[in-house]
Image (tube, rainbow, N blue to C red; front, side, top):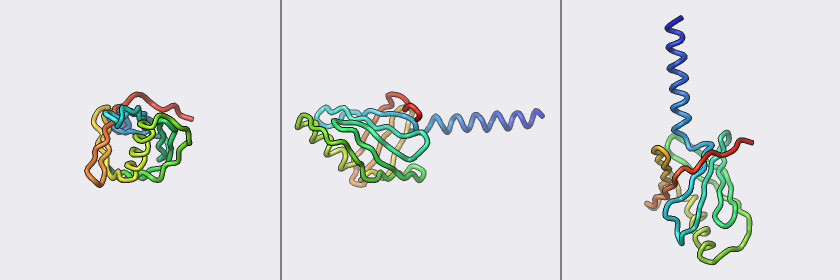
Amino acid sequence: MKKILSVMAALLITACAAKENSFKGKEYKMNDAANKAEITLAFDAKENRFFGKVINNYFGKYELDGNNIKFGPAGATMMAGPENLMKAESQYLMTLPKVNSFVLEDKSLTLKTTDGQNLVFEEVGTVAEK
C-alpha cells in the first residue's frame, strides 16, 4: 500500500510540474514591442489555439512538437488605430508565421523565428476556461 501511495504521489507531482511548465491556459505580454505597442498573446488551455490583442484582436491555431511551434495564419478584427501601433501590429502578425521554436523559463516565454528574432513575453495571468 505504501508503495502504491508513493507511486501515486510521484505521478501527481510530475503531472503538476508538467502543467506548471506549459504556456497553455496562460496570457503573456510582449517585452519591448515595436513603437511601445502593448501586444498580448494567450493560449487556450485545452486546444491548440492562440489569441491576443494589439489594436485588433487576433486568433489562430498552432502546432506543437516538443519545443517546436508553428503558428498558423492569424485572423484579426479590422479596427483602425494610431499609425505607429498599426505598423507594430502588422509587423508582429507577419512575424508569427516565422516562429519555429520557443523557450519557456519561469514566467518568460521566448518565441524564436527562422530569421533569428526573439520575441520575449512575460506571463501576466491565466486564461478563463470556456
